Length: 351
Ligand SMILES: [Zn+2]
Image (cartoon, rainbow, N blue to C red):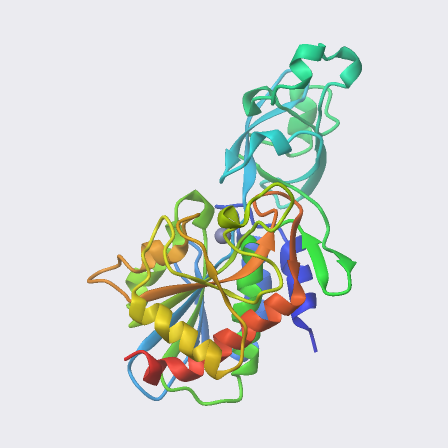
């Protein structure tokens, strides 16, 4: 049987740049189908795995499938690609990496984001970040026609690709833990609940386009009409040199982070208290995500229709929005356990 670490490896290595989630959605579909009463996709590419409960109410568990990436915006006469971001990147970390590009016919092409060697960069320029508009991808084409012959077109997405690696036992790195870590939590929760009967209906909602402004969660919540929702994220682990504790939204090794407020939602005190009580009742360690860093799908979900009570729990991940996100597997496991405990407790604990 696949362990959470195996699922995380497969999902993080999969392709799923925002707006181009087909591959990762297919993987999730294959993994959750045996664990749900019904799996369906919607018009824009969200994927829902439904477990039916004994009453009419619905709990929505949300994770986003997409990852930050880039899109080709120009192919020059020498075959170099110019690009724009899909999602929030720090331009300073983009040059000097290998990329994987997905063509229209589904082929993967490899390239590098080239940089001028220090020998030819004037000393005064070496201290300045390179604007993304000046960066380029080299795919080995020597002309626009050659790039065309490789199947590369304007509009093709690509991502900086680093394969999943265990740095040491229980501590792993990969390109897309934001939010494939949340996708793993949903899949594992579905697996652990597969043999149990449920109170509320539970919809495991895997959404597109979070990194472009919570797009999939909005349309998902509208059609699911949940009575309650929890967004599950891989969020900003910042216990690293040079960051004071008051600016570390979450830390690794302290268990799942319960959000009290981020830029997209102020979580109700009732919801926070419920999450705390469920964690404490199941002896699961937790921490708070410090306000008000980042936004989450809960921001879109709680404003749907007449309003949906929503909370957020997160797997602490360092270096998100870079190709080298890292996490501790014990934090992932504790987040899975908390989510399982929530599904079992929430129908009675919240209402
Ligand atoms: Zn995210």
